[in-house]
Image (cartoon, rainbow, N blue to C red):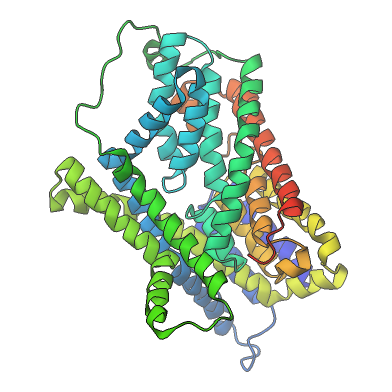
Length: 471
């Protein structure tokens, strides 16, 4: 069977099972992986046998899980512990204080962008929402602006920057070093933030104060002379609060820089042990494990928590991580089976990818992610599916004319586009803010669509100005 036909059938299966049958993305992606395996050529030496076709799909599932399971689990623990200890709250309050009341949207967006790197999008929105409501109670204007500032900052990190599960698996599928992925995604994300703020102000201009349907939320947003203090327990210091975020970033980037500087050079014996230690600490799994340990210790001392309490918090985090691990591993199996089908070679036979067509590849990746996100609503599933498809092409930075991480970022930008009723992010925005769905479509859906396009344009420009091919 033609590999392109296999690809088309598998995409119909994935989108149909998620959108129409309402099945979990894990079941959809794993079913598609098994189907692609059966439609692909037989296992060498076992022609005509069906069992090997099934086992190679499950083996690919296990191989992907081995690469990302620990990273996702540690990320979930970091997020849960930062929330419980008050570290996340401390970061948000510090950012708000630094920017001041007049620049509160800047503070909310910066806080959302920073927090959503280790903390899941929905948790970030829940953490920052009380601050948005509090400032609205005082000013009685620009409610949508504050909400969009939170959502845009969190969305950029959620779709572009590891160790968030989606970008993490994109880097894994495309064989991009995590340090390189961090540098490029942070560069694009930070450069996109000013445009995100402009989009938020623009959307707010035509609907600053939409109708609030929920009576309880409407009552909470009424002007009050005094605001009640909801957090009586002391928060950890700022440097302790931000340590779980900075520690893995510094360790991973440090290892990447050292690797680049020491490549091809002889290393003195005395320094060799030090370099090995730094490379070990800079490994993503080791760095995130250390960060998770630090976040647990901060939670224990900040909350005076017993070991039984620690056990409950970690169990809650790992329960949340379990489903994400299943979905991302199934996506990895799907991509591996697509490579087995020969779809990469088939596409290469139709069009040669070289430096002159690298921008075209970015456009294709962005459009594919946008279409899948529109159809089934999950940014993570769109990231997994599209990166699996493009991984079968075995692209390199030399072929594209810029660092391969820009391709990963283009996929992430496409996964921002089109957030509506089938997207959990849309539901969180609408339900938690109290805005009716029609107004959420006019504000959140329009804004996120523009945000994805802005991130993609920034990616295009930076890929030409700062190609980073040798990174």
